[in-house]
Image (cartoon, rainbow, N blue to C red; front, side, top):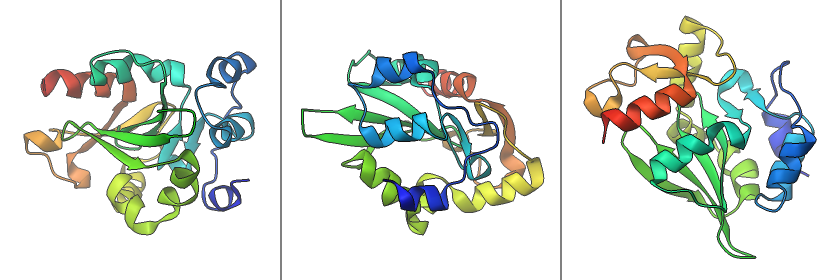
Length: 188
């Protein structure tokens, strides 16, 4: 399962498998494909930090802030290197999707209709990585600004909605949770 994802996305050395209590807490809320990642390579940066799979408990408050309410069946599971928050929605027994909070433009978008599609299609498609992960900018930022630590992202200064640009000279590094809150407050 997830062979294409695993062959393309390489976990950082400090990735850690999810604790049993986290698996148990979210087992009924997320699909087996995500649980498999959590159990094997686990939480942490993949492909030098292009995407980070996170402990949902660490980002639930951020998700509830952006959504304006707590939603039981929505689970934050990853962040991009630039602070976009990905979350999973179990809509019915058979319907699901993966959404993104584009914090730069204060938009919430449905990306794809399944977690498996997210992992095996969207994340592997070069055009989708360029759009949703800003892969080309990430490569340049990684070269110039260096490695991202756990929950650290490249931050646009100023944010794009306020005149920043998708260029390395507009980037700094910062904590993802703080950045998510700060951008929310600035754009409210």
